[in-house]
View 1 (spheres, rainbow, N blue to C red):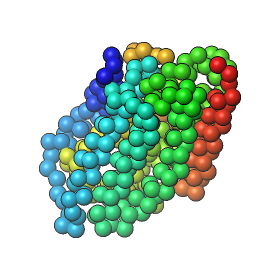
View 2 (cartoon, rainbow, N blue to C red; view 1 turned 90 degrees about the vertical axis):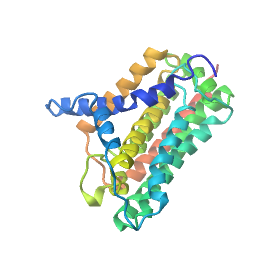
View 3 (cartoon, one colour; view 1 turned 45 degrees about the vertical axis):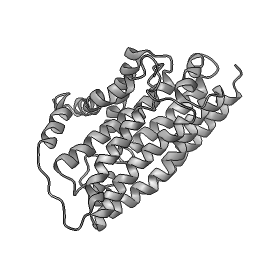
View 4 (cartoon, rainbow, N blue to C red; view 1 turned 120 degrees about the horizontal axis):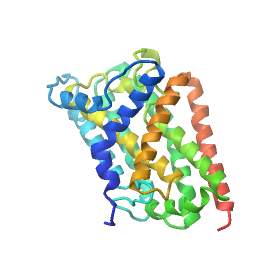
Length: 300
């Protein structure tokens, strides 16, 4: 385990709720409201983990194992993702494939828990989640494949630092395209506007929130904490592509700026119609492929 390799794991464990709090504060600023405290997510999680919960008699062990196993998968994903020039805690050849697989596994477990309730409404949300994720995952892999193919190194901790010379040089257009693609994937993976609205209560437009309506207490707390972890992990990929040479302070500042950008986007844009989500995700994949091709075509 290399020096500084625990940065992303420690940040994910301790600071991921703060990233969600930054998004909420920025949205409150744009709305002209005082908004919740920056650390409100921590208070909410503490309250949820102190509550009891009721489980429907129609469910099985899958229902309560889903949030716990999903959170564990996301913690493992945090150990595979670098942050700036700080390497991952567990780097190895091909780790980017397992990283994408763990994100998909966490989603799959949430879908299973939703289907286990026997609710047609949660089944609808699970169906939408599976359909949209099938288009987001290729974009994620295509964006990560660019640095891997360019550097010839199969670990993200070794491949992403190779982008550092391109930020102000001939690699800049390719890096910008890869960053834009990953930002769209970040919004889709975390159920943010314009793909989804985490605060919606309109039944016909709900996607992720529709799958977790039956969870309460500690189970709901695990889902909320897992959402924070997922935002941190996917956000660290965006920061590591755009700021591959950033140190610990620079990378953490980049994550904070990413949270502000998400809050700004959600404040000035509207949620897309469900029929317009697939073309945008396909466009994210095409952007990632174009960025990869441009990156491979740059000499040096």
